Image 1 (tube, each protein chain N blue to C red):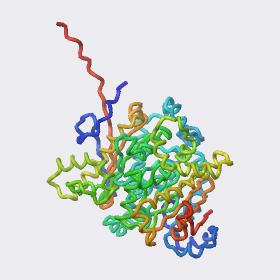
Image 2: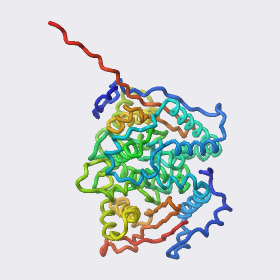
Image 3: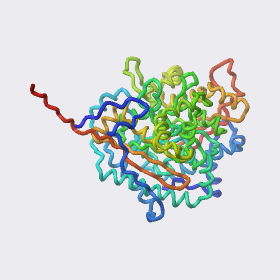
Image 4: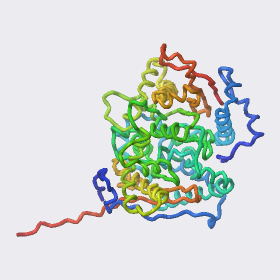
Length: 247
Length: 304
């Protein structure tokens, strides 16, 4: 399947007649380069991918059975569909600032909770991947939050504090490093924090217990062009029984 | 059977528990691995994903009310070591394929992107595995700041900070995107959950979240009560996009930019049954806000 190739310049005009504009505002709409961009993208997808693979898209229209739940950053440079070439139907994908997973909290974070509940409880995904990345603006903001508690951003500053424990760990263990190096450490520590927060969701715990679910962390470095992947395991040993002492 | 410990409390140092340790970092470097014929293996893996699942085709159409029943069914497919290695081996090859075929081919562009992003779009789409905007609308790296949540919803400002409006604030105030596109889609499980919700149901995350779209449900019930349930859901999928567009305007820094004409709000609807896409733009100036809570729409398009 030719997924992500840019449409050639000669290709698009032939398919412009696929457009039907209801309000005859076609001329005005097509002058907007933003709209043109979307039109070109969809036509390419429909003609090169969708129409050519009915045996895949037919069943997919009925139901999805993704094996992955992926948490990735909203950053425009790190779409997992590009970096890890996830095809349609493979990954239930959550994207937010700094790819964070807060701990179970039905009052504050029902948005993330709904994603996990649906993916693990309903779709029965087998893998959760939390993917961080280099030069993450959300992590940078977290690491540079003012000590006096003042905020510049109402929503961003509140959200990135989900990863405050990761920041504290990095500051205490790597305080001698430069700001940029500390940010890079925090990108990975925040992934680990999110992975451990996943354990606060009962359906995730059950999945791990039954060995039907695996948790992994990842880090995409778009400066060096490399990817790190690691597994997150929670191990509980059998209890040691201490017999009563005879007096 | 080993029992997991109670969930760690959200303390300042969750990493003090020695039971929770990340293990086995493997670094995936570049060119020593020969790149395979990735296209062919991708297609066969993709088919393999679908074929081996063994779940009912109609699973997506079940309502949230069946959550309790689902919990008693154990997954028949266990995550064995061999399967895991295959999956992540494949992931490694896909990454290397991306690196060789895209990243290195367009190295200068990617290096520029590494220094900063300036996407013109913010896209809010559903987390559904079938509706990734990178695939269906061909957004390339650097083009779209993307938020994906259940049922592609935007909560209004008064609900307080959340993951979605943090991303909105960053995209609009920091990156300064010029367009926000909210994309709904067919057969949305989240919208179906919203439409089938009963008052006496137990609380769940899904229920708490989709209540953001309660106005869309009310509008749908009012306008389309004569239609069957599936068609009502279809109506609600689009109505929810419009409610989200209205909710965008509850953020003062968004409304200000829309009035100035430097930010446009668009709605979209992707139907993956017949592969069509509808798109419309909120017409702020043409709307009569004093008379009605419905807004005017311009530049409506339908692509098939």
